[in-house]
Image (cartoon, rainbow, N blue to C red; front, side, top):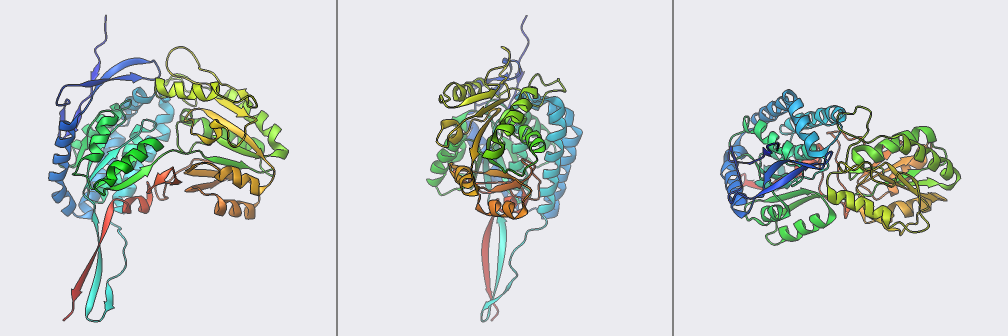
Length: 478
């Protein structure tokens, strides 16, 4: 007896559609390793249709008032709250995340972020009009950029979709959004919900693989391409967008340093850092995965962190005692396993370092010590439940280790010395610095990095402004 697979579909111009050529992708539940749905493998014809719909809808949506767009976004937020259980169920199938944590840690922030951007739509700031040349008055208009091609990742499919469509719609743009090929279910459900609220063509979802995303970015219609993903994908998007000078918004990888000084409350730091490192199976660009601890407390800290790892549980989504679920897909399990298999002889696995069970893509909470700055696992993003530990002698070396990677998204400093915390936050070359905490985000503050972590900001008024363009208008008073 076979179970009938769910059939996910694209959402284009207010209706659900299969891929024009009928091609599909199998979608796997990472908690079981079993196929539960099929999703469209969209091609050029599907991308063309979505872009045409978004372009046709743009003039009317652009010309709507900020108050009108605010009402629409507030309705979307309310609808997401009303359909929370359905969204959670879809996301859990997508990712294998714990049900309870998805309900508490994702739905409330998503709804809050949509409401934030609803308010931001009515608070566009700019320089005052004035006479900067005799007989002439200048004003600055801030306008939407147009159609936005957006590509969301598989680690937070729902939330990253919100980070993309909410500011874009609030600013008056129309959207063509592609979820990851491994996690389309919750985005398709979002389309069902949003489609009942926005005019047709304003919000479109095209499912597919990398080639689908490439076709979206290379398409002549979008004025902007936004992607959250790997450094390699970001570089490819930037290269493609350069051919017709598209605006690009990139949120890429991370390798967050966690500087732990000798005056730190070790018990409290270990508790918070272990959660920030293992949450969502470490599949977070800001995860606390690279601990750099003062030599005087190194051994004590490593022992406490290894104990915390051993006590941290991974398992099935309905188990309320687990902190995280599986890695998202078989390729990601292979990547994480490869990092551990290739560890140099001087490295020591203090906890974990192995797959958990034979069903699904679960990996044990892992701590690795004895590492050097140029080791592969220190320099490259693992994107799994793996925390590395290095020791440092003084502030200068701590900063050298922290800044000595190609990523620059997030970081944290753990100390009771306020002046030291201020020195470190100034010198750390990362888009975010947390002090005595790691990983909290709020809608009002920007999220984004430097170097190979990309450019542009998510969340906040800065993220909203990224989806606008500036026009100077000058008029003669004569």
